[in-house]
Image 1: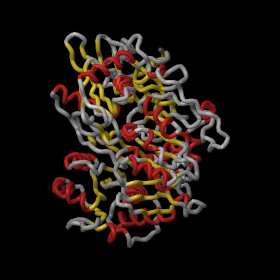
Image 2: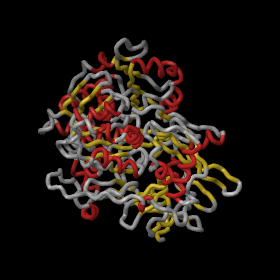
Image 3: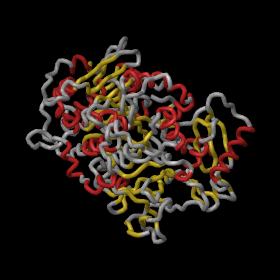
Image 4: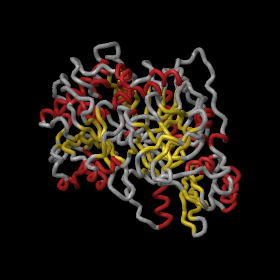
Length: 611
């Protein structure tokens, strides 16, 4: 170890002796040379890292005319209109009842200009907060981009939030404007209105059978008649642009602040990590109420000038396979939970669809279990490329790239321009960088990339604690192998301490998922008077399997064989479903709270169905 870092954050970890690493359990997926394939945007990773600079990356963008700064919405929409992309579909919206609406880049420019003008007409100022609460409808995208043109701070919200988490976020973010639908307003916002004195304007998108309520503004009357012309004011790259909330445990949610310069990261990662090419049809299944749905469901595909599919329907494997086929999707970005749900139905369910246009698949939300990567190869003829990032990082930081061999279970390698390290605390309390391969520690990133959060709103001390000198401490435990691939272990607060060993739940869950009966697994540490903690697993089964004592014993034996006695779970409970967030993360803290009868904390991001 070398390079002492400042800081006093509590993290010291060590790999259990003799543990079978994920890296050794699955062979790498070799990328064959195919002369007919679309060449990767980044064919040589090492060369890209040597030559990359963020200053050079800014050259991919235009900037506002006349050198007036950098605005996300201009880069996503307006800059394409003078050129050949003007009449290309920017958004293809697919309604849940079969409706279909397409917006060219020219259409999107006019629509977002109208919304920006509507805000100006209401007296909304640069820096005011505009919240958006809706399902995946075109007006959500138009409002978000139009508000960015007006230099407002935009905060998308989950449409599945209940009144309490909505009130908390609107209060913390000092929301002045809210865009929502008639039904969501009636059910969730109207009862709160009196407790939100700073919320001056509620703009409602009408729905069939739901007229805008008293005290709200009708989207059609307010927006549709506005001028399609709008000049984006000068925008400093450091001007606030986006406010994304992360769920708390027992405390309040944190509001991560992002600025207009984040668009540089969005654009570069769209090209490098998702391999977006000019002619691609791209589909990100994430809800814009989660940061992925904003950064990669809206901004990155638009700044790269591709056609983006937006599907309103909830998850259904047949519906999703139909979208991939009918829209000729070439790049697909989805969540581990969706992949595991597709795995339940087997590879045969994919066979009847023409997915020949699909050339690149990626996943994010929770590290993707190696079994799911391999299943992608079996079912689709190509692997899912896992990547890693956080709300706080604003964009993809580590990825399995199109030109790179895939090691199932690995997060991949850092993006060009991103310096990552594994750090541990030394006996004196300072952090030290770990050089040795496959040693667990906290994943740290050297500050300075454009989409790095600029703070937690109203919580400066909480923000400062995320850093040790110039290094951002992610709170995630990981390892780096001898080839520079990173491997997720678990959240620092999820790590299980048993008999002197520290165990990451992800590895145990991945081993359980290898069993033919297991659809999902969640692992926690359960207090034990002798060992400190024991490993306990909760398992949801695939169709055709039923809980039984014989199956429990079989799973315990399977895990012990795969992981060894120290790491394998000592207890397994069966569950019909496991609690997870809308981004696909198993809520281990909730499993633990329920097991031990503890307070469950913030449940605002809990998702019972996948959208």
